[in-house]
Length: 474
Image (cartoon, rainbow, N blue to C red):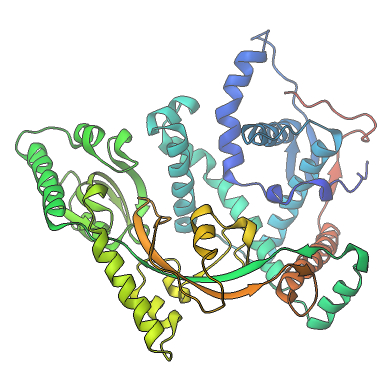
């Protein structure tokens, strides 16, 4: 019985515990690859069992598929990762690790409820529909209806969610003390300490221009006319959605797959939940515009709907109202020193993401409070250049709010703190150093933990040593 080298460390963290998207992507890509590369349609690849964990087996074809998918996904992102022996064995070790975690889940009675699995699957399938272009395109790629795909992949998805929950449960219990962070920092050679670029802590208050009264009325009237076309003239709502809807679901006939009521904006879910299957709603107003909704089916607290969305014309927004509100807020901050920017952000800002944190803008890549100057987007960078001192607040500036509809908005920016470029140190960079040290400790402890779990299960390798590797069938 072959005891393999430790290849698991070479596997990128993104693929520690592969997710449903890998399976889906491979099924979409495989038919195309076969069509291009299979010169003998009658030839069938020889599969074999290459490893066993308790009563579960791992097939060579499973590892081949995962590796192929990983390479193809990276190729689609412009990264050319070649096949290698170590990469292939990394995926094998990862599969074995996942089966070990499933055994641990049985012992700890870790169970992912059906509702949670279905909700996560629906969200992932909705993403895939968007990527494929339509529900029909996704079904053509698989050669089977989506409802069948859900059934076929449900248990695979449940297992992947289970292993991730077991893994995260362990990692969340790993903590680190300040002395440990200090030891980590001291272990870095002084001549290897990185230079930390200039960083900024910023906050914002955002106001979205309201629609001019006539533009809003025109949008509602158009939605009402479309509703009349459905009810009075029997025009299919799906046809009108394809022709007139402003939402991303328009090309799919306005279809929103089965989703939880709590996953939809409250006005939409309340109106849809009050319908019977096949019934058409009144015109419903949400933050996105005006909707005409058809309920297709309801299962528990989940609904499948079709809708037409008519948004207010962005050229008919009242910019002056937004600018004047921000000028008033800024003047109040300048004239009344005891006013807190963070409190006004919580009560006045219309950005749902930053208002709950008192307007704090976080680094979109890392989620950290301090953002390197060279990573600010162009709009924010130009605004910050005009702020000389900590505590300065900018004039109102236009920008595009990060939201599904990409709304035009205005904001004022406050420079909360500026940290000049410097060599990393414990005083200024403790949180950054703590995060790095914690990640390294989690990896060390997790690796030891998995090695201990391996002793509690039966593991058998049915493959040759790496010097005579099995060639994956691409």
